[in-house]
Image (tube, rainbow, N blue to C red; front, top):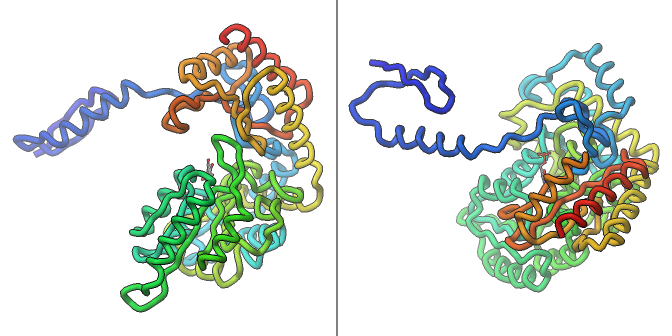
Length: 418
Ligand SMILES: Cc1ncc(COP(=O)(O)O)c(C=O)c1O
């Protein structure tokens, strides 16, 4: 009944049932061989995520990861994780069924206190937090209005929620948003088939990760009020970075308490892993009770949670790291502009060094690597055609010498290639 098939790609032995004709499954495996042929292997990093990454025993200036505050190697976070392992071990349970851990409760109340919201709930990624934020409260007959450049995790969240009425407004174009909101309001003027009112939810990234520009949140909040819509901001790149001591984009704009749903990542400025939703308590309770990402998926591990508690404590205690980050941002931005580079409309530590041509961006990134600087080329489809760039992500862990080394490499490669 079973024949042994030798896979051409992996050369492993695979047991498959033997039927007379299997054209569809054959085509599937053949399509994978084609994908394997074009596979790109990432660099293998053998160090922690500090100002430098070790690749093939060589240090490279880390201009490509979102560890904005240098927490990945922070001694206090490492000690907290080690101490928690000694006390509680490693894994935790499915929180709804097997009891929630006191560390999770502690982390969530510290995040809420830091953010100044009534409550917070954590997940193992911001991807899952976005999925929960949308899927738990939005269904087929509700309406989503979303910035066209929102992160893929938001697009997936809206798809998974099965929302039929979806509008994408032109990136940060408030008159297009208003146009879409007026269409959404007209749909929402009739109730759902079960007689309940429809939710209209505006979703935006706080910081757009390819360009480093900010959402026009004050205008979005005003329009939401005018058209009776809820608001959600995915602040993955703003938490720990923007606002007073890193309290996020909502605080940056002085809008505390005026955005219904704030999603944050715990893997970027917080340098560990996970995501959270911060909101008013009734909504947090809804998420605590109904989130499929919580009911059917495991919670953060013990060391992750303990390290994150320490990170939130450090941010609550002092604004020094955030201040250092922003002083590096100013230094690098002035440096790039002084070298004649176009750095787009960045308002954040994400600095897109605009090159336009894709081949040039790839070659630029490759040459920077030879000069000891790791900065990724960002090309279509991640950004529109003709807007390829090398993206630099700033960290508080850089010294002035590190910034100078990076700028010197960009100067040298520019002179060579442009
Ligand atoms: C805007 C935005 N949202 C969400 C995510 C997902 O974050 P996480 O890695 O914590 O799942 C990312 C990650 O790149 C992001 O840039």
